[in-house]
Image (cartoon, rainbow, N blue to C red; front, side):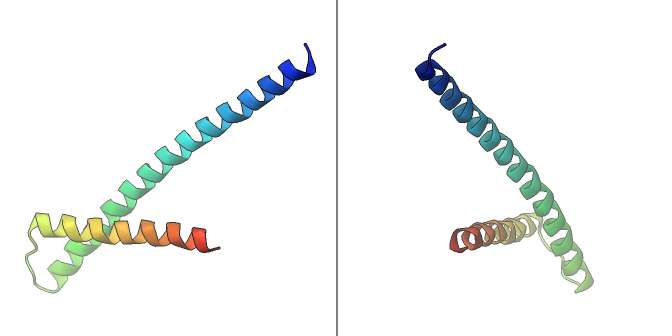
Length: 82
């Protein structure tokens, strides 16, 4: 094979590797966000119960979603700054 063919294959392999890694990292991010959301929802509902409040499920989910979103955006922003 010529050098040009080898160079093209090498570039294609790097692009393929990058796409696969991006897909795997995206899946991992979604899974970790769901785990974090579940833990946050549990903490919010438990905390409301300790304080004697009866929290509607919609408000608990909304508050857990906002906290999870803030955490993920804050972490992404921190990585961009560094």
